[in-house]
Length: 146
Image (cartoon, rainbow, N blue to C red):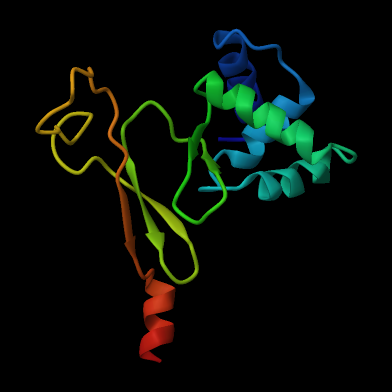
């Protein structure tokens, strides 16, 4: 997808979510889109390349608004800062490297969302299951074996 198509898609997604289209929101969507799992500082670093002077607090505000609108997903692996990704609308899971902290997506483990059914939901109507797998990524495995 070329830059103009990505821009038009982002504008459409913001409008469909009922959000005002702003340069910061477009820049954050572009920064996170297709780049895996980024923390706020990494998003800030990418955004200030095109919008110098953007504060880290502004990035947090935009990330919050985009997450609330379900245009981004926020995950919080243990002992890690919050990470943001553009893959939304499904119930995928994550695997985290215990050495370098790399994060990758893992498709739903079994069946339809929420993938897991608790033996007792205490009266809750479950709609999402969050599973985090932990292990060594391929690069860290090579380093250990090396």
